[in-house]
Image (cartoon, rainbow, N blue to C red):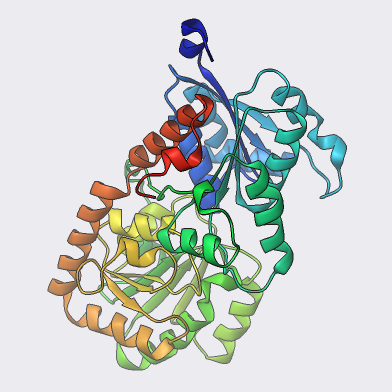
Length: 393
């Protein structure tokens, strides 16, 4: 970009991710960011690498495809049938060879493919985005992150300070490559008609809720153990779990074993989850590990009192006793006690919720995230290195 005409040309950006973001937080963040990139400075394409007619129907029903179209974002869906379905990548390779400036992968699978395909297509800038993992075991993953992704990416983005530290110390990735870009969320849509309490027939009794994908990482068994304790301590308490995933059969069996059918409600995936949160008295995140979970940011935005585990980037979001209550992972008794304390003291719960909202609005809004991503794209495209861009990371 040596001439003034070239410097004024919009940067062509392709965002690569597994899904369009109807459930997973990382995919949703990728979509929200690409939509909000300044259209006067960036030509934007979202490439979803695991696309099917079933997923397309869900995306149309949710309005996600219409949202992309309204924002002027090109959409490219690849009908991959499996990991080794190499021919399905041809449309993306064609796109990359048409003067794409930046290829931005999200999560391990897309990061690997961005590193490989971006290198083959000689894409000028490759950005990888890590949305957290446990950083335990999985030697192949550590090898891929260090030897393949970090070696070929111009920048490797981390969503929390702890993740950045682990990428450097455990995975031994060059710290000059790793930039911290905290997650942010947009303002919520206008309230809908959904009413959790009316739907479930709950009056003024306390409701404890969580919204998440039902994966082992979320440690929802801990919440069920806590629910068993709460059922004895708080008359009429209801524990609501919004979301779906592979752990659902395990949770259903455990609910039956603990005889919690009247206490715990599994609502499955809901497009109106933000509306359902309005019925929570206390919001919970009991994960074993996290990056910067969008669900916790949404609880903060909704002014909910929060009990969350002291893992990943959550301590960057909440200071215990100030914006929420932090506990150690895997401690159902501590979780039950923290929830009970908030239910018993509504004034304290309201203070924590208000402080959490103030912090989210000031520091974890989607516009902050987008401006940092834009700065990184333009800096790398202009020839600066991640190390030069990373002051303060």
